[in-house]
Length: 441
Image (tube, rainbow, N blue to C red; front, top):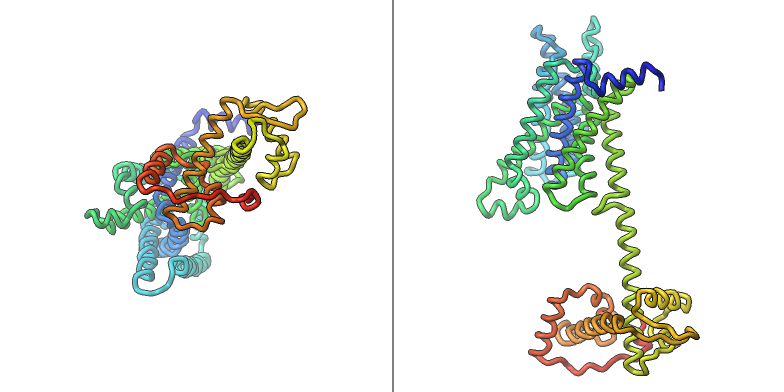
């Protein structure tokens, strides 16, 4: 890395430049606000609404720019352009709601219509702005792709204040927004102002979309509304934890994006911020403790291994019931369509776990005391469920064993007790065990 680059990085990390401090403060709080409010947007299953609102702000920006030139105001004022973007975004949101309410058009079609029409209008207005004399349109395209380098102290102060308001509002109405997201019908029947809360939440999303124009731009602002909460979902199922993680991910993505953009001026900060968030998402997708791919694969392998072991224990126990405690390998092979290699491997695993003992010739096995406890529990659960299916579910006898085989491994002890009480009260029908051939899966 060149010495100048290292020096620039060091200056950014130490916050020696006033502009760096300004940009970092505004971008950090914006990222946190986007991640937090995006959590509720995701739970409301309205992620595409953020994209629609982002595109719908373009005609408002262009219109405010043209109006400012007409009346002689500062056409590049971020506050002025933000007001135009907010008006246009709210108009887009109301248009979507109106299409949903007064027509049979589905949600996705309504979003697509509003996105394309508003963005097309904005592009047409931008074309008109580009033809203005004297280079008056210079810099307006920064709102499409984002331009943190041009952020002034006044812009950063506005972004910081608006983002802080969004964060405080989400924290203050966390319970109400949670109820709205998880059970809107219950909230409505218990007297909560559902429509007001929904409009307030959508207004916060519009506000985040508007203040994100300077940081990440129209096209990428939806990424910070969606990626942080989705990435947080890989690590927890608790809403408070997910919201907190989404806030941290959004803030960290903004900080790293601004730092990289400061060190590499030719790299747009908005794109870097989104790429950092996407990297965090990819890491959670692979290694997340709740829904990560690798964790799920390991859990599936452990579950499959446990099922094989429990099936083997039950097979040995059932063979020992009809024969001697020493069970021949041939009898175990007849219980299920197993391969000999698979049975031998599983027997040795159970022997290492001290659940089975193997004779010196390797042709017979016997349950240990610990193995007898586990296998009795499995057989008991299996037969209880078989009796329940026969007595209460009207399942055909030919399917009883297979259905019980699927559920016996997950029966809760309390459910087992309830099954025993239920069957004892009504008295089970006479149960005739199936032939070994019919019991095969």
